[in-house]
Length: 278
Image 1: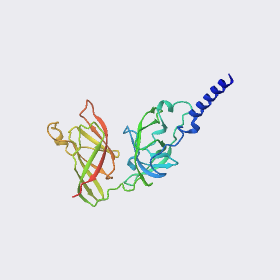
Image 2 (image 1 turned 90 degrees about the vertical axis):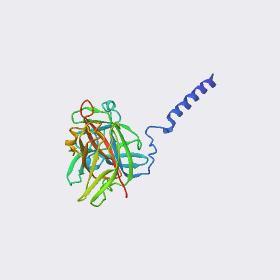
Image 3 (image 1 turned 60 degrees about the vertical axis):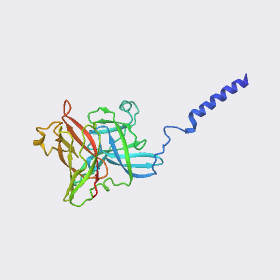
């Protein structure tokens, strides 16, 4: 009988040891980030055009990797988002939830204008994988979002290499587009004009139903409005825009409004420009 009791007790002890595993497999254990400890400039993307990094920083933030744990600092577009939560909105509202508090950041636009916005330090579980990040605005409502961190490049200067390093002149660039339904395309290669150090891209859509585009918060209307007045899908005429660009070989965000649906709808796209060499 004593042997049986000892045997049962031994089983319980072994089971408890296996479950605790002396910390092995714990959610607190740092995962392998796949990149060495250090500081990186990385891209931060979300599932909503209303929640994004300040246009001054071109969707970029500073990623810090230390002891296998990753944290990214992002500067948002305003002070309207007052807290973030690593997880779901319903959990953010529970007692004891650890909210991510804001910092006050200064961002500098290409024209020299300086703005004060809120910034946040967010934990990053993995590169190139979506994760849940909830937010609460100054109206007191929580919202769920999916976000992703990608393209880490060693360094700590968000604006390094972002300017278009081309002499004044006319160029052709390949335009890679991400986002939308895929039904409307952008003509590629496309003309790129650089004058006085500023670059302008001519965007020609395959559809005539785009009535404006938004780049860095500025709205641009089609340059061929008269032609579009009598255009339809079979005419071969598409909406044409001339928009400013400040980066090459990396994605930047634009918003295009389409009237092809039952009501106008703004769609977020990522464009990447690559110079066509002679």
